[in-house]
Image (tube, rainbow, N blue to C red; front, side, top):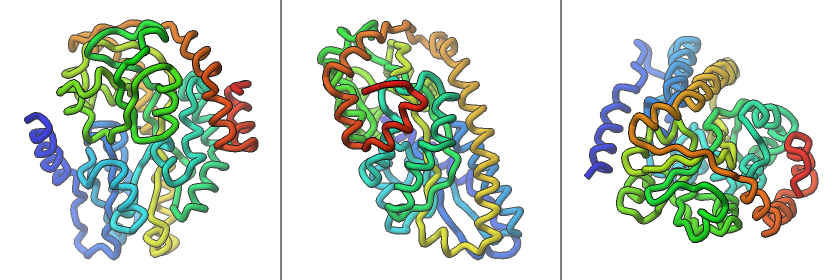
Length: 333
Ligand code: X2X
């Protein structure tokens, strides 16, 4: 099956991605995991980042990259990060929600109209608030998030032109309560699933559709199993750079400083790479056979309001976090 092929390819690519051991044995041999394939800008830049850290620290820290959910789906990898079996991990705030509830605030529907606006909030006071909660939950978090992008809906059965087309639509969401609630509020039939299982689930028609930024539709080859690409920009998505707190504390100050400096540097490069891809990929996906339409999302917003989506999540996240969000988004609830 294709799933098996993908896993084999990922394993082969990952062994190429292993950073060459320096002459001196590394003092710290850590693992970094992500849910995207090695050719996504997240891993391309992460590889450069760890190479730079290794060089700067004279080989003291060597980080092996595990792309494509090689160590398990996001839910499992988060478990491994918390237990210390995994040292570094990038994870969407909407999935981190199971451990840090307020982390899903980045994913509120139609709060951000583009990535620039979203990063303005998450590099600033809203992000600081979320990162305090992540630290309080016992994890290391870097101040700079890594880009995923504005999310669009794909489907094998029909284009999504407006809110009515979502009625009863079987859609996969990432494993996060806000995601599921958002699509329930829109009248769809959502179910959560780790990204590692999405291709096969779409291929076997367990779901009619899913939603992701262009770059993920591309590197995940979702165009092979999805016909329609409906531009909705319904939500923004980005990854926190997380670490196991004990593994982080074990690193000497000069190594920590090198990680912090390089993660900041390469996160900014990765944002630019990913944004360029997201801006230019629509045409390529159409050439690959997808049919593109721009959805009328005015009805989406009306439904989210009338179903109580915004008031529910305001109550969950709290007044303080919500007011920080609304400073950027304008009044939502
Ligand atoms: O699981 C997804 O759809 C992905 C890759 O976009 C996230 O990490 C949220």
